[in-house]
Length: 298
Image: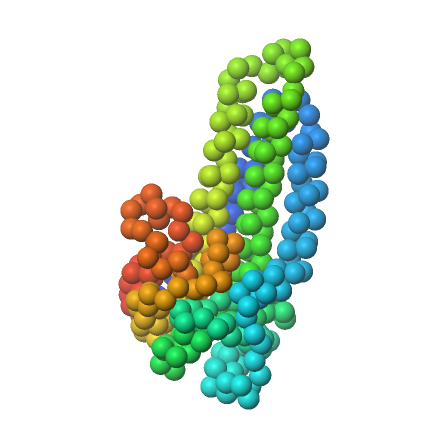
């Protein structure tokens, strides 16, 4: 029988298993390219570049997201009810009070960002504040608090970096292969490994992106379950998701780089239902999330 606790534990185990597969995938890919090119330079350059990129992303990702979405900070006097909800739930979650931002968008939506609990931000749209009841708003804020508490922000940064490493390594391999005319190439490698490496270079970025999106979808299920633990009222988030998904407003500042941050996909009417399209979705189908929430037992 499903409960709030074992659903959260199950999603955590599945997510870290996917992370393990991701790392193994990168190691195997690096070994294959190194073997074919008979050079370690491509890996060294890619790893150093990725480390520098990840460091800058870690320190400035929140500022980049807030600027891209044109989110504005508020104080308690600007919206006392919203501020109190965030304040109370942060106490319940046992984390520092995050900064509160509002987006001037009609679409009901929300996201959390920041590099850790002490530098976290919760942002909501004006559409969310105007269209949800208090218990529903609490469910949404609890979901975002769960992302902060579960360290999803850091995990997503790690995953993005891993995808970046794969893209860099494959691109460098393809470029090096085009310009590599060494006469002894056939003596160092055989046809099987050359074909495998070329196929991997083409397919690896696609597979990595699919795995990244899979992890993102798992984190949404986990945040739903963890958020319901905070409010002890899964129905609040369930009805909030129903209203959010039913609203046809467009989110003007949404793009492929920040779409995964929002509580629901900001690309309304573009989600699709087939299993193939689901592989490339940033979020699980809302119907599945609502069913999971309503299947929980307090």
